[in-house]
Structures are given as C-alpha cells and as structure tokens.
Image 1 (cartoon, rainbow, N blue to C red):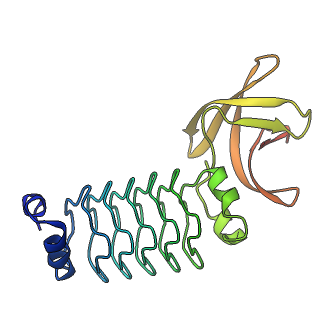
Image 2: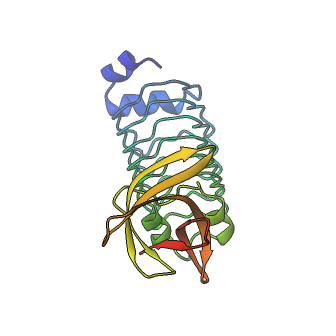
Image 3: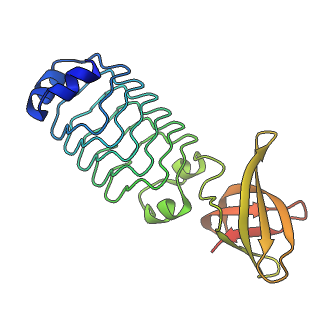
Length: 223
C-alpha cells in the first residue's frame, strides 16, 4: 500500500485494507491511527511507523525487522513471537504490551515505556536500554536477559558515577567507542580531573549495575 493511498483513506478503511494486506515491507504508515488493527504474520520489515497509534493491535508473529517504531503507541498490543530485530523504539509506549518470546536483538529501546510489559522469554541480545529502565524492570528481566544487553547500557552524558575505591563522584562528559569497546570520559566533580575509562555491565556486590573500570581495577558504579 502506497503512502498516498494511506493519506486518502479514513482510519476505518485503512484498518480494513491493512487487515487483508500481509505484505507491507517499506510501507509508510507514519502517524497512522491503527488502534485495534489485526496484523498477525504481517511483513512490516523496514516499515515507517513513527508516531503511529497501535494500541490493542494484534501483531503476533509479525516481521518488523528494521522498522521505525519511534514514538509509537503500542499500549496493550500483542507482539508475541514477533521479530523486532534492529528496530528503533525510541520513546515508544509499550505499557502492558504482550512481548513474550519477542525478538528484540539490537533493538533501540531508549526511553521506551515498558511498565507492565510481559518480557518473559524476550530475546534482548545487544538491545539498548537505559539503566533507569533496567531498574524499573527489577523482577521482570532475568539475569541472563540483563547480561545480554548492549555494553553501553545506561550510559548518558551527565550521569553521575561513584568510585567504589575512594567514594568520590564523577560526571560522564562523553561516550564513544574504540576498537569495539565502549569508552567513557568522566571528570571528578571535586578536583575536575578528567579520566578515560572503559564501560562494563554486570553484577557488582550482588546488584546488576552499569559500571566503569580502569586498569587498576577501580570500579565506578551509577548512583
């Protein structure tokens, strides 16, 4: 379905048309109202769905690899066993969505709302989440899921880290990569000395944390 056809159709005609169209690769559905639509097994690879309303939508087994789902509303949507590999879900609202068994490999979930979402068995290898999102999902994600997340998890400019060695605090001033490793530049909040560290994530003192470690073994954890 072409974008001009979508613009001309009212939301009810659009839903009827899409319900019978399972081949929607590269479709432009930006800002479309698709609440309650049924798109099980649909092929939506690389589709543009930014800002679309998909509340209560049935997207079970849908192929959404490489799609743009930024700022999309997926509240109460059913995405079980769908493939969202490499999708952009920045600021998406997935409140109470059914995500069981969902493929979210390399998905960007930065600032996405996941309150009440069912993530049981979801594949999150190299997916990007902020540390606050991880903390809000305490008791929801398994340790295995957490450990599979992207290495720069939670890293944002301005974050405050606390040294496990000297108890001083450091502010993240920039984040980059070198040789496939995530490199973080931090500055001491007291003496303003700048340091370059490599970031890690894992279990520190029994708690899953974002942390930065230097060669001497000093550990800096998020506060």
